[in-house]
Length: 341
Image (cartoon, rainbow, N blue to C red; front, side, top):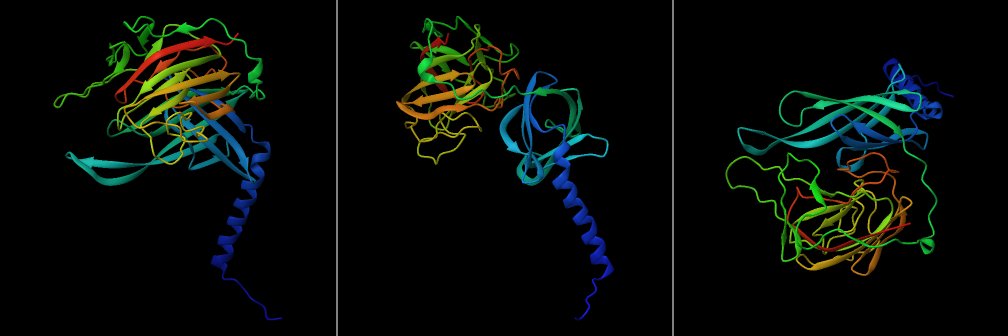
């Protein structure tokens, strides 16, 4: 047999690669970060992190304050036991007012320590509001185990509670009092019209929430979304049911009636923009059912965790209904919540 010798440079390349692969496949077996974590970010933001073993390799998904739950770019255990998580996003860089002049890939890095059953960490990356760097601190706690699928036939309801009286905003308030309220009552409808000035400083419109807080419930309402607009209905301040003009689009977890970025509707039931649409939503034992315009589009599905924009990380605590007011035009009416006993 003819002998074959690899060049020393190739050998040196193969050895660390093989070593790295063996570490990747074995390091997850004793990883104390495995599991799902609810994150509380300084300043009141909410996050969510799911660290898991994917075919022998460490992997994770992250929700950071707003937006969608997304796969991370990388996750690994450092030599000192720190969990390092990175997420990247592409942004359009501008200079001197020129739009979309250049694309950059920005990297945000979370470094996380574990003490007992709690997490402590920092997120560092380029500033979102200009030059420089931003660092946030956050804490984390394990998400409570998901209960089994409940029997919807055993639900007992209490007395219905009208959330909107058709006259004024009694029972509602801004989540952030520093923001401008774009909601008003027009023809017995709760209308949001976040008008921006043609010239001048951008106005920050706010989200509104009910004074009351609720546990499990059924929520019925009607909504009208003009073309190209969107809003959101947050259940217990945790879970956003997407409200958007998505008529005619392919099924997606960002369409009308979806649990935003988490659960995709099983069928398209939305109407064209500008038409009144009916929601029948039940949140029971961390499971969600959504009926849109008479069609069940989410059927008693488990809710893994908060969605972007959540105001609390505690999935077991009561919370308000809140309506997104910082995105676009929308109108609501006939809003009635019936508690589950």
